[in-house]
Length: 362
Image (cartoon, rainbow, N blue to C red; front, side, top):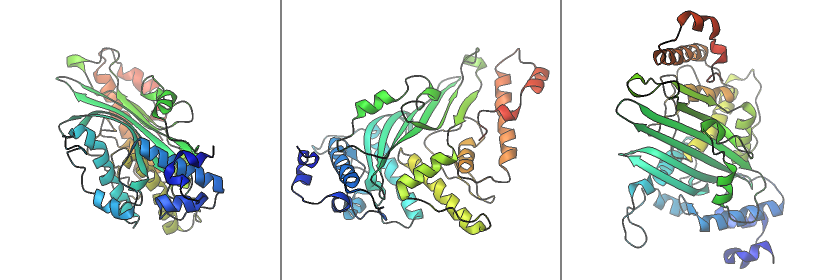
């Protein structure tokens, strides 16, 4: 049986390849030339996955504008929908709309590319206490997609805070002509602590962190002992941009303005991955800009904005203040660790500790 006969909406059309993709998902964004079979498989995968799971908005541009308003608090049968079930889709719309505006794109150009494969969110007032979600970003440019996974927990108790998260992605350059399967994806993820979640089966870590409660760090003696790591590298951010928006030609290093535009484009690709799981990070790209962390989730456990710094450093931007903020961040983490350990020896630390060994250094 031909692969497209499994889907009536495809079977009744003689379209194939890029024409098929444009018919169902257009207008695409400067689509690349690729094999007809690649665009056909992409279209079948996207159609069947959208039928099986939940798109953030409907596909046509007009529907995207209509859908931009927050989701109704009633389902199709008129029953109430819990706020927990709406948080992710509403957050994605708000965050992705900002990136679309930055890129001068029509409303919905990127939003309609996002499908929520799995969402388990528990709110504490308006902010997530815990969320575990997997979304798929179908490229508007190439017959490929990126899966993004965010697992997060933050709960403040009387004398301490439980906090951990893992954020990662996986690129699929050759989508099969079948619907996505959340059970298969779940088995690919590591089942250990935050460092392990995106360390297997082609998954790439963006960043992870947690408050360490070992060595007696709990109860009244609790301190914010932050442990974490930035996983992005230059090769990774260029892959993400290539998949989402196509190849990006690197300008001459002597052209400062063109280089900054190039680097901002790389940063925006990573910010879109974050927006697809419901939050934005405003990453400073020049010395007169500042990093602005997400409003609803906590990616950094102390005052050091190491996530923003790590994103821009992976994209080739090194600000004048970055080195000093790295040192100050390392010192702050050292002081917190010292505070929860009464046997801590200052002289021993000065002798053995170096900011060069800090996990947060990018």
